[in-house]
Image (cartoon, rainbow, N blue to C red):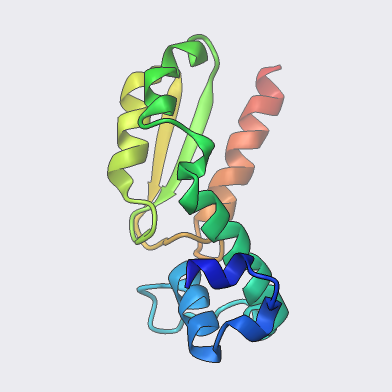
Length: 138
């Protein structure tokens, strides 16, 4: 299927089922009332998103293994806030916990009910509160 994303036949190269699978992988939620963003109904958007996501996954995010953790010492003295949804099925909590452990100036905020999105109450509020705190600290 990966080859179809980058072929010359464009959107006709993928079946609706394949496009749906790509959308499901990025919009998965444990919230029974979850409704994906309406843009995922557009097959052109799904194709573009699938191509971009596949390109990054195929290339390991353009990072070497554990590159961020290995180079976290470069963050010394820089404050940061890591906001993560406990129910994020695509990006496990263990990764951000490992970063928080090697970045002493960071604060980890885990939103219990959130996944990999900002709609869950607490996520946007955490982002706004964090940026406000940085603004007033300047």
